[in-house]
View 1 (spheres, rainbow, N blue to C red):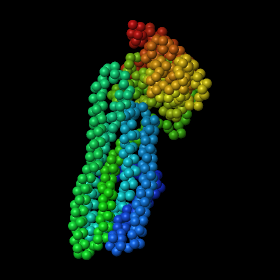
View 2 (view 1 turned 90 degrees about the horizontal axis):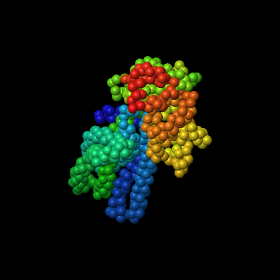
View 3 (view 1 turned 180 degrees about the vertical axis):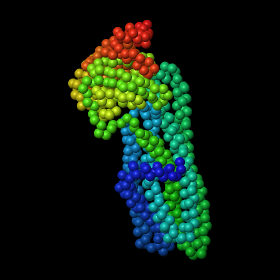
View 4 (view 1 turned 45 degrees about the vertical axis):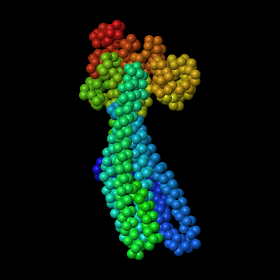
Length: 580
């Protein structure tokens, strides 16, 4: 990372996130001045202490100077404590703001954007990158203020005691600055690589959690453990690289300090011998120089912290700056439903990751309060049609209308408010059954929830659970069977009371008994509703008012079951294969 880019990133970080906390930063700045004054006063007090107590043996100074030294140390300690308290809050609030922006981006991004990036990468941005930014804002900013003022105060004291020695002592400062600039670029590069490795580890851990059963049934524990070792070792090496670069300044600074002190003692000896420097001035100067060592060393590493934090903020910015393609339009009218008629006009759509269109030239009309089914082989484009209606994706071609209103022109919230989805990929939260169902309508009463469960044929098994509706179901409903999870999903959709229902292969993974129960629940859900169904089992859609047969992204035929079974070879072929 070049210095011009670093400057640009830090300027943006300040304007958008740090500037709002200037009050606390100014408090920390004032306290840093007190720390610097206290530090330099400790070194200065050694001058009268040596002269008045040890040489002149003045009794007044013998007790007053120790008291002043205690006051100076106390002032330094308390000021540093309160400065850190303020700046830690600033750093944590900046990190929190970034984490909230990332979370908001995840919640509002279109599905295609999320599909193109592993969830583990987002976790790394929230955990790893925001920590590096927080470290820059809190530790880096405080050290910059505190150590800069301390060095200024201590160097001023050195010049006050003897300007010749002071000129000699400050020779190491430009050397430290050059060292910091060199190491800063390396730490930025190392941090970027560590961020990628952290994302890879988070992604890997997410996958082995999700695939725990698959790993065991295929006996891939050893292989996955080998992958885990490789991913972790890669991150360990990157962190070692960062650590080694961070401490690389230490031996160089120690060597420089050694040469400086050796030269200082030699030069001081000559000045004392010639009478230009008193012993009291020597001890005061030596104390100031030694106290200046730590802040100078700290300032030499701030450049590295800046590059480290800037590299992390750059990765975060790549997420929060990404344009959200599907979003709420300002002042967009609400969707007004009359009959819930749905029409696709010459609709075409292509996923970012493919070259060919998933669907093309789709022209269909679905009457309100009717059931329309979509059948075809895998990859025919059935799920894509379902996903376009709630605008999980937007088509590149054509228009989708509900009751004559283009769904792109109405508010997103009003569109989705009128849709319910029951999918084969059931999403349940690690919460109680009651809260999972009430997710569709948080204001629903217990009676309304129970009634929804009764319609979904889920009340019987719920009542048999130890805690009934307050039973926790585990991550994604791991403590429930497939049929039970699907019935809770249907109960949730019933509770929403949406006029349009989307069913995406809702019974494809169920056994015959569970399927019969779920089909009855679906009948209750879809009664007097406009319903779009995707079903692999054609026996479940005999009663559909309209069946659309799809092949290679196109609708090749449509009609009811009796019409298609006699006139459509593709439908007849699908039906016969299932009978076999």
